[in-house]
Length: 137
Image (cartoon, rainbow, N blue to C red; front, side, top):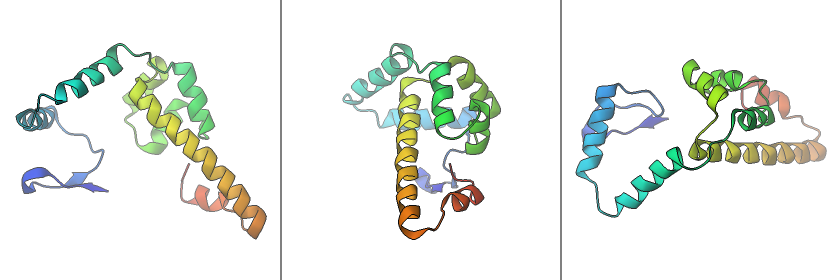
């Protein structure tokens, strides 16, 4: 998937890291579009990262095991996280925002497994090998 950049600049893959200068340029661009109603969203982000309880490292390990991985690091490697990010998550857990995403993925995976089981019961065609061959969680 590719992100379309404002102003017709070069495109880059979504999730690709940017330089610190690029982050500052992005912040400057967004600050020009800042509206008073955005204050609530900014305060919510700060509250979420500083005040709301984090998902503990132990809870995170349970989630990644539920997604089929032995460790946070193995999960990080499979999804393309930087190693230092996976190590940080493994040690300190996740912010509530990131935890919500992972919990949603776990719920999605559980629904997918149930659907695959139902499909296999009806058709006798196993899907788990297909997913494993395509490295899908």
